[in-house]
Amino acid sequence: MFWRLKYKTWGMDHGLSKRGDVLLKIINQRKPRHFLEIGVFTGVTAKNICMLLKKLHGNDYSYIGIDLFEEIDNEQVADEKAPKILQTAQCLIESVYKFLEGYNVRLYKGNSTDLLKNISGIDTVDFVFLDGGHSYNTVYSDLSALTKYVRKDVTILCDDYAGIASVTEAINDFAKDHGFKVVIHDNPSVWKFAEIIR
Ligand SMILES: C[S@@+](CC[C@H](N)C(=O)[O-])C[C@H]1O[C@@H](n2cnc3c(N)ncnc32)[C@H](O)[C@@H]1O
Image (cartoon, rainbow, N blue to C red):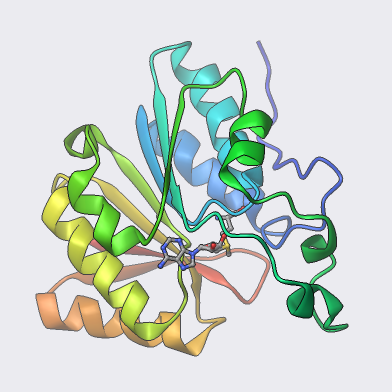
Protein backbone atom coordinates (compact mmCIF):
# COMPACT_ATOMS: atom_id res chain seq x y z
CA MET A 1 0.00 0.00 0.00
CA PHE A 2 1.26 3.50 -0.87
CA TRP A 3 2.01 5.58 2.23
CA ARG A 4 3.40 9.09 2.18
CA LEU A 5 6.13 9.97 4.64
CA LYS A 6 4.48 13.12 5.84
CA TYR A 7 5.12 14.39 9.38
CA LYS A 8 1.82 15.07 11.13
CA THR A 9 1.24 17.63 13.89
CA TRP A 10 -2.39 16.94 14.83
CA GLY A 11 -3.09 20.65 14.63
CA MET A 12 -0.32 21.58 17.09
CA ASP A 13 2.23 24.32 16.48
CA HIS A 14 5.23 22.02 16.49
CA GLY A 15 8.94 22.76 16.21
CA LEU A 16 9.68 19.75 14.02
CA SER A 17 6.95 20.44 11.47
CA LYS A 18 9.42 21.85 8.90
CA ARG A 19 11.99 19.10 9.25
CA GLY A 20 9.85 16.18 10.36
CA ASP A 21 9.56 14.74 6.85
CA VAL A 22 13.35 14.54 6.66
CA LEU A 23 13.48 12.75 10.01
CA LEU A 24 10.89 10.21 8.85
CA LYS A 25 12.81 9.69 5.62
CA ILE A 26 16.01 8.88 7.52
CA ILE A 27 14.15 6.47 9.81
CA ASN A 28 12.45 4.85 6.83
CA GLN A 29 15.83 4.29 5.17
CA ARG A 30 17.32 2.63 8.27
CA LYS A 31 14.17 0.66 9.18
CA PRO A 32 14.86 0.33 12.92
CA ARG A 33 12.71 -1.99 15.02
CA HIS A 34 13.52 -0.71 18.53
CA PHE A 35 13.52 3.04 18.85
CA LEU A 36 14.65 5.32 21.67
CA GLU A 37 13.69 8.98 21.80
CA ILE A 38 15.24 11.20 24.48
CA GLY A 39 12.95 14.21 24.91
CA VAL A 40 9.36 13.24 24.13
CA PHE A 41 7.51 16.44 25.11
CA THR A 42 3.87 15.98 23.98
CA GLY A 43 4.63 12.86 21.94
CA VAL A 44 4.01 14.32 18.48
CA THR A 45 7.26 13.01 17.03
CA ALA A 46 6.82 9.80 19.02
CA LYS A 47 3.47 9.18 17.35
CA ASN A 48 4.88 9.85 13.88
CA ILE A 49 7.70 7.40 14.63
CA CYS A 50 5.35 4.73 16.01
CA MET A 51 3.09 5.02 12.97
CA LEU A 52 6.10 4.50 10.71
CA LEU A 53 7.48 1.58 12.75
CA LYS A 54 4.07 -0.07 12.66
CA LYS A 55 3.88 0.33 8.86
CA LEU A 56 7.35 -1.18 8.56
CA HIS A 57 7.12 -4.05 11.07
CA GLY A 58 3.49 -4.69 11.98
CA ASN A 59 3.37 -5.26 15.72
CA ASP A 60 7.01 -6.31 16.00
CA TYR A 61 8.56 -3.01 17.07
CA SER A 62 9.02 -0.97 20.22
CA TYR A 63 9.35 2.67 21.14
CA ILE A 64 10.99 3.86 24.37
CA GLY A 65 10.65 7.51 25.34
CA ILE A 66 12.43 9.39 28.14
CA ASP A 67 11.42 12.80 29.40
CA LEU A 68 11.09 14.84 32.57
CA PHE A 69 7.34 14.95 31.73
CA GLU A 70 6.95 18.10 33.79
CA GLU A 71 4.05 20.53 33.87
CA ILE A 72 4.77 23.72 31.95
CA ASP A 73 4.82 26.58 34.41
CA ASN A 74 2.55 29.60 34.02
CA GLU A 75 5.45 32.01 33.64
CA GLN A 76 6.63 30.17 30.50
CA VAL A 77 3.13 30.24 29.04
CA ALA A 78 2.73 33.95 29.80
CA ASP A 79 5.91 34.88 27.93
CA GLU A 80 4.66 36.29 24.63
CA LYS A 81 7.80 35.09 22.82
CA ALA A 82 7.13 31.50 23.88
CA PRO A 83 5.99 29.10 21.15
CA LYS A 84 2.20 28.83 20.92
CA ILE A 85 2.30 25.10 21.61
CA LEU A 86 3.21 25.80 25.25
CA GLN A 87 -0.25 27.23 25.89
CA THR A 88 -1.98 23.95 25.14
CA ALA A 89 0.77 21.36 25.46
CA GLN A 90 -0.20 18.15 27.25
CA CYS A 91 3.16 16.88 28.38
CA LEU A 92 2.51 14.92 31.57
CA ILE A 93 3.28 11.21 31.26
CA GLU A 94 -0.39 10.15 31.56
CA SER A 95 -1.43 12.48 28.69
CA VAL A 96 1.41 11.28 26.50
CA TYR A 97 0.56 7.61 27.15
CA LYS A 98 -3.03 8.43 26.16
CA PHE A 99 -1.91 10.22 22.99
CA LEU A 100 0.20 7.18 22.05
CA GLU A 101 -2.47 4.61 22.89
CA GLY A 102 -2.46 1.58 20.62
CA TYR A 103 1.29 1.64 19.98
CA ASN A 104 4.07 -0.43 21.63
CA VAL A 105 5.35 2.30 23.87
CA ARG A 106 7.27 2.48 27.15
CA LEU A 107 7.79 5.88 28.74
CA TYR A 108 10.28 6.73 31.48
CA LYS A 109 10.03 9.86 33.59
CA GLY A 110 13.21 11.48 34.87
CA ASN A 111 16.64 12.69 33.93
CA SER A 112 17.83 10.95 30.78
CA THR A 113 21.49 10.50 31.71
CA ASP A 114 20.50 8.85 35.01
CA LEU A 115 17.79 6.65 33.51
CA LEU A 116 19.71 5.24 30.57
CA LYS A 117 21.67 2.69 32.61
CA ASN A 118 18.51 1.10 34.04
CA ILE A 119 16.32 0.76 30.96
CA SER A 120 15.59 -2.85 30.17
CA GLY A 121 16.06 -3.70 26.51
CA ILE A 122 18.41 -0.77 25.87
CA ASP A 123 20.77 -3.28 24.23
CA THR A 124 18.15 -4.03 21.54
CA VAL A 125 17.65 -0.36 20.53
CA ASP A 126 18.73 0.28 16.94
CA PHE A 127 17.90 3.97 16.50
CA VAL A 128 18.22 6.86 18.96
CA PHE A 129 16.77 10.31 18.41
CA LEU A 130 18.39 12.69 20.90
CA ASP A 131 16.21 15.75 21.57
CA GLY A 132 16.12 16.11 25.37
CA GLY A 133 17.91 18.71 27.50
CA HIS A 134 19.70 21.24 25.32
CA SER A 135 22.39 22.47 27.71
CA TYR A 136 26.02 21.62 26.89
CA ASN A 137 26.37 19.32 29.92
CA THR A 138 23.15 17.41 29.30
CA VAL A 139 23.89 16.78 25.62
CA TYR A 140 27.46 15.71 26.41
CA SER A 141 26.43 13.42 29.27
CA ASP A 142 23.52 11.89 27.30
CA LEU A 143 25.91 11.09 24.47
CA SER A 144 28.43 9.59 26.92
CA ALA A 145 25.74 7.39 28.49
CA LEU A 146 24.34 6.38 25.11
CA THR A 147 27.66 5.21 23.75
CA LYS A 148 28.08 3.17 26.94
CA TYR A 149 24.69 1.44 26.89
CA VAL A 150 23.53 1.13 23.26
CA ARG A 151 25.14 -1.16 20.68
CA LYS A 152 27.94 0.21 18.50
CA ASP A 153 26.04 -0.10 15.19
CA VAL A 154 23.05 1.94 16.44
CA THR A 155 22.08 5.15 14.65
CA ILE A 156 22.40 8.12 17.02
CA LEU A 157 20.74 11.16 15.49
CA CYS A 158 20.74 14.47 17.38
CA ASP A 159 18.32 17.32 16.77
CA ASP A 160 19.07 21.06 16.85
CA TYR A 161 22.65 20.93 15.55
CA ALA A 162 23.73 24.35 14.22
CA GLY A 163 20.57 26.04 15.55
CA ILE A 164 21.53 25.95 19.25
CA ALA A 165 25.13 26.77 20.18
CA SER A 166 25.28 24.62 23.33
CA VAL A 167 24.03 21.57 21.40
CA THR A 168 26.43 22.12 18.51
CA GLU A 169 29.43 22.58 20.82
CA ALA A 170 28.59 19.54 22.94
CA ILE A 171 28.20 17.31 19.87
CA ASN A 172 31.43 18.58 18.29
CA ASP A 173 33.42 18.25 21.53
CA PHE A 174 32.00 14.81 22.27
CA ALA A 175 32.87 13.54 18.80
CA LYS A 176 36.38 15.06 18.96
CA ASP A 177 37.08 13.68 22.45
CA HIS A 178 36.10 10.16 21.37
CA GLY A 179 37.41 10.11 17.79
CA PHE A 180 33.86 9.85 16.32
CA LYS A 181 32.57 11.53 13.17
CA VAL A 182 29.64 13.95 12.92
CA VAL A 183 27.55 13.73 9.74
CA ILE A 184 25.01 16.48 9.11
CA HIS A 185 21.67 15.58 7.51
CA ASP A 186 20.38 18.75 5.95
CA ASN A 187 16.76 19.89 6.18
CA PRO A 188 14.82 23.10 5.39
CA SER A 189 15.28 24.70 8.84
CA VAL A 190 18.31 26.11 10.68
CA TRP A 191 18.15 23.24 13.18
CA LYS A 192 20.01 20.37 11.52
CA PHE A 193 20.14 16.67 12.33
CA ALA A 194 23.62 15.48 13.33
CA GLU A 195 24.50 11.81 13.30
CA ILE A 196 27.28 10.46 15.48
CA ILE A 197 29.28 7.83 13.61
CA ARG A 198 31.35 5.56 15.83
C1 LIG B 1 12.47 19.88 22.37
S1 LIG B 1 11.54 18.96 23.50
C2 LIG B 1 11.37 17.40 22.72
C3 LIG B 1 10.47 17.43 21.53
C4 LIG B 1 10.15 16.06 20.97
N1 LIG B 1 11.34 15.32 20.60
C5 LIG B 1 9.29 16.21 19.76
O1 LIG B 1 9.83 16.24 18.64
O2 LIG B 1 8.07 16.32 19.91
C6 LIG B 1 12.70 18.64 24.74
C7 LIG B 1 12.19 17.76 25.86
O3 LIG B 1 13.30 17.32 26.64
C8 LIG B 1 12.89 17.18 27.97
N2 LIG B 1 14.09 17.25 28.82
C9 LIG B 1 14.84 18.34 29.12
N3 LIG B 1 15.87 18.00 29.90
C10 LIG B 1 15.76 16.66 30.11
C11 LIG B 1 16.52 15.72 30.87
N4 LIG B 1 17.63 16.08 31.54
N5 LIG B 1 16.11 14.42 30.89
C12 LIG B 1 15.00 14.04 30.21
N6 LIG B 1 14.25 14.89 29.46
C13 LIG B 1 14.63 16.18 29.42
C14 LIG B 1 11.91 18.32 28.20
O4 LIG B 1 11.03 17.97 29.25
C15 LIG B 1 11.23 18.44 26.83
O5 LIG B 1 9.98 17.78 26.83
